[in-house]
Structure formats: structure tokens, C-alpha cells
Length: 101
Image (tube, rainbow, N blue to C red; front, top):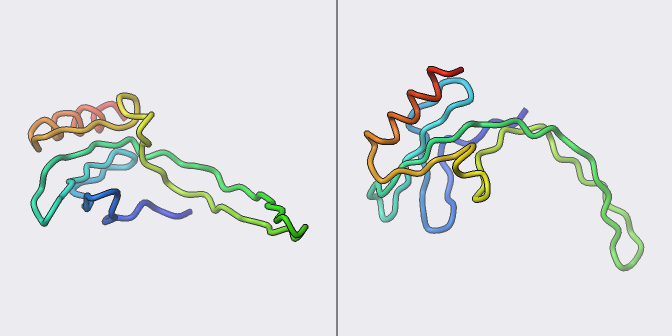
């Protein structure tokens, strides 16, 4: 299984994993090397799959997606992801989720 990266870039933000306890993760978001926000995520597992793509020329390519961890997408915020401007507020949510597992 592929684990989520501890650092990654999304849009104009750099993300850094600050804390993780099982499936609960707290990331800081930085812009120009300055922390500007925090996100708390319930990490989920997406099962691997195999798909086929047929090109206009008739060639068929097989694509394999391995089982991997995923973070909340935009539509998942409020259920699997939360965004905060201040670390204190993010830690409250993080600790609340950790205590429920």
C-alpha cells in the first residue's frame, strides 16, 4: 500500500505533516515558507484497481492503480477534512478525532 507523503505541494501551498496518529493526520500549509493554515484529515484507504484505456488508434493500455491512502478532496471537507487558520483550533479537532478512534 502506498502511504500519503509527509510533504507535498497542492496549488500554491506546500503541505507538511505535523502529527499523525493512525488514520488522523494534521498538516501545516505554507506559502513562501510561512505557515498560513492547518488541515486535519481522516486518512482513508482507496482499494487498488485495474482499468483499460483504448486509444483512437485501437491500442489498449492497461492501467493499474495500487491500494493507497488518500486525503479528503474538496467535496469531503466537513466529513473527512477540516481547515483552520490557527494551530490551536486544528489541534482541538485533531485531538477530538484521535480520542474517538
